[in-house]
Length: 115
Image: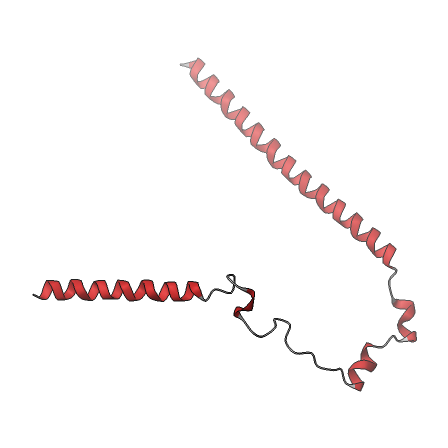
């Protein structure tokens, strides 16, 4: 009688496990957009006078602002240099692998011909 009781307990455990998994799947936020009533951005809070003063444009700092076209061009140059360096590294790795394979073939050909 005990083996049947153990089997029943195992079956109940598996049924509970699958029902828990299906419960979580049914509450997935991917299913519906209205699953979470609150907004992801949170609540809008009006800025205070101190925050507004900090965000206001300061004429004393105007000369330190970078120009957008210059910054964009500099970023582009940096991106191009990064791509060139990565491509050069990949080429070096490829050349080393080819040279090593070629040396290995010559070594096997030389050892095979010597015997």
